[in-house]
Length: 243
View 1 (cartoon, one colour):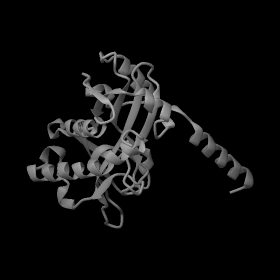
View 2 (cartoon, helix red, strand yellow):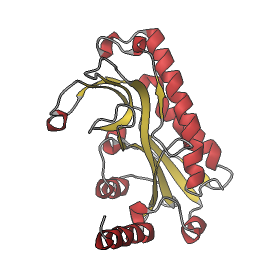
View 3 (cartoon, helix red, strand yellow):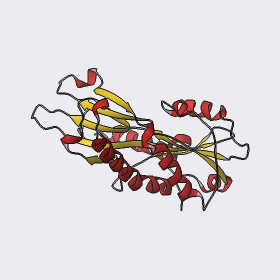
């Protein structure tokens, strides 16, 4: 790398570290002081992906073979909401808000601002805490694709190996209920900073999503709970919400 290139990278890093809005991983002390009442929107647990990357020298031309299973009956969002409520209730007042999870399934920051203004929330709510699907580099099979939300992953390699794993790619966003400004945004990570995932046996991969057995569902939902438990409190603490 040339000297000019190094200077350019350093400038970009400096700009990134000083950026505000969605690039802030933790709330600032003034923002924390302003937030006394919050509502929680968990929209991460409605669907479960079965993502399979097949051998190809042109894998970047097409998305992986991905199928989805509707898993609202797993009650993941209810569990996440309860845990966030328990972790924050000593610091802030929690208020309920009615929302459509579909409004927060596919999102960007502009869409989040628009959709929170559509909510008929209590005017006393200072901020919304959103738990959303996120996009993360494939840390399991190291393909060119991203992993999104909750799912089971498999990559078929030419060598015959098939790395497999259960992943939980999600993000917590704190947004000002009055202005739509992003107070902070942080991806959930394992203690070592990696994608939340667990290695899984081949026996967990069903022929089709609808062929998922009760035993497979029980194992996957239990392992997802483990991933959430390892990352949710840590992410909230990293955002200074529970410190």
